Length: 178
Image: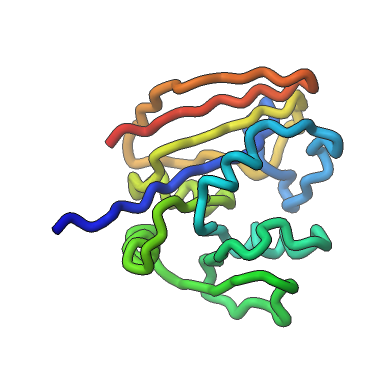
């Protein structure tokens, strides 16, 4: 019997020059009043999040836990700070992307939201991302943490759709065919 395969997707905002955060991790350049641009529908489609430790620490600084009761797996070798945010289902895991996918599949998860610069890069390098949604923010920040890093080979993307929003955000969805 064939096992259910986990779909891993990325949904991320970048500056037009390709950065997901300033060099110190700051997100102060993101618009406060951005209209809904597909994030809510995307979040409704995922049943688990896989994020990096730096992303987790950034999210903790938001004040309100943004993921509700969705399970969150934080990839880290360091202990997570306690207490956990109220209502959050968070666990840490120190594993390769392939081991993470196998673990989540074994638990019955079907669609993972992969987030965090290093984690996205590792999953791309391992060939484990099926969908990329990249929303470009109409701002150049000059330097920072890039979305993409070195890859062992080209990753061929198939354009699915692009949507432009009144605020100037431009969101493109790409499929990665194995």
